[in-house]
Length: 471
Image 1 (cartoon, rainbow, N blue to C red):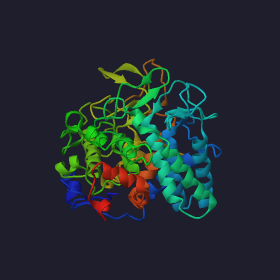
Image 2: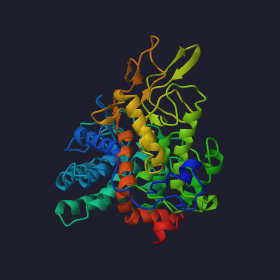
Image 3: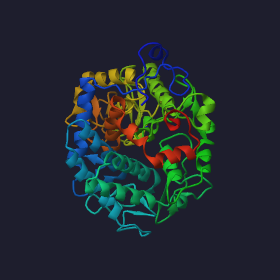
């Protein structure tokens, strides 16, 4: 990424049960009112998108306040949070419609082509990062299949939300359909049925495909769903064929498809309601992808509780590893133990874990496991108030790193009595917080995306059935 709140009885006590579909302990309806602290977090985080995204272009920055390029994936989140702002009364529908139309129009009109400069994409795909002023490819960044998919997730949701007769809403829907229709998904299949992660005009396709369980689910689903350039349904079978060898584990709790950083269990789920729908692989396992993400959240809590690395601050109430900013790339002796630290990196249990906790890891898992996420959010705020500011949580913090030892920090600063704290907010970490809180509360994004014919087509071509697909 709703499979909304697991009741605080036997489910929570067991750390998860074996669920078939939604399972006996999953509540199937939205929760309604939010805990006031969670509601405040959602609004503050929404305000980040609204305030830092230029109205004329809709090019949401990758990070802020540090000057940066646009993140195409963050634009997908922005297009999703604007309607959430309307539904919560933070902005008007007119405001959201205007911002959405300017964004979708900008991407629709952005130049495409095989040249290395002066374009925003090629074959319907977009580059990972775009220049904030021109909207053209930033530096030598790759043409990204996953970032394009995350952008399209936001666009397709916007098209479902703005469903009225107003001329601008009609135009939003027309432009979204045009942007989606021109993506030439089969072009990115260069090694059998798998889809490449990306392409550079200078060197060609990246030598890596989407396989193993991760955030690439949305890539495959949208590729199969395309009304103009679909890939064969064999792409989903090829995707799942690597699960057993690359992803399946029972460490830190119940068996589940493992991907160490939690973002891999959240990104596709922001738009796809996986509750109760099963593909052939998960049907054989007896539970759905939503339950899989719930187990991943519990596994991270169990890892933090065990704290085998003896990192400061880890506990069953403060946990969460994902891709995020870090202090820098250096090794430092702390209390007689050699510690290796990283700058921006994907972190997970036992994988590049350097003691850096990302609030988005837990907060964006709220729809899967609110009974452990809400206490975590509150504990982080209470114990480390310096990480919670104008736009919600700063990207990450590290209580273990309390001095630099002469090493240069690439991000953030050391705060006395706390440790290292990032100094930026990252769009791809902010978006899942707003979106998944809303799915937890009202089912808004999932509910509207369940009506999207493209998504339904992709899921059915992948072999999903049951639940809302059968309703």
